[in-house]
Length: 300
Image 1: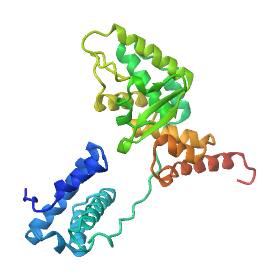
Image 2 (image 1 turned 180 degrees about the vertical axis):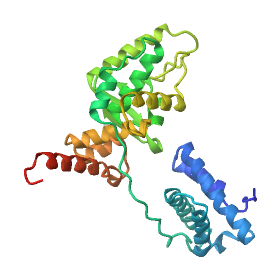
Image 3 (image 1 turned 90 degrees about the vertical axis):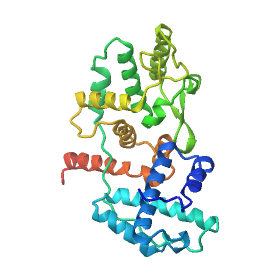
Image 4 (image 1 turned 135 degrees about the vertical axis):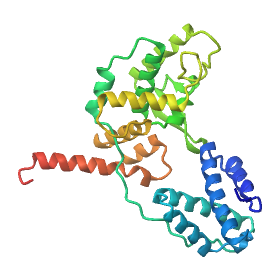
């Protein structure tokens, strides 16, 4: 792979890590995007100085990505990465002109969030027989928490016992950018959590009891395990093609919207930075209203 040490990538990544406090996953995405771009610059333009990189060079790289059939969504992420990188270089007086400032993101068709019908989730929680084992109890509880809080997979596995506020009926969640948010939960879920925690006393070995959800060996759950549990359990009750923790997050938001919840409140519950990210759920609500109108209105 061509050497890209001539460009201040590491300095920028350190800024994102220690100043912006971005997650490790996000840092890796930025690093890969920047490495891909500067590898292209080295190969095609013989290691230009940072200040010599122009918007036409950026567009050449984007065109090459398009030729390689890279998805528009992925290309837009790379554009966003470059914009952040060169904005930082401008701030640090490394360049005088940002070559990405005039680059416009590609248009992509918005796909409505995939969600599971309420009747199917009712079947999952009321009619499904979970094994009377630690694994069965863990699987049922993680599914309940996903659907009743709308949290992300990374947020779920990092919930600690100390994050459960029984007196106020809430769970504290640490989201993207280490931002905390409080999500209200009902007494039934709190009782499930209490019963689950009591069962930890019978686990042997060196347990990581500070985490709420742990496996039978007492260790913190890993993402792939949680993903597989959700995929299997949703597959048992739903014909939905997409079966992932994020589908339960979408289901949480869509069902709240369909039942009249305020969009700003849903934004806070999901931990969205922008209302635009939340408003997509209103499309699902409108589709439901159209269906009701079509079935009930005499002129439809």
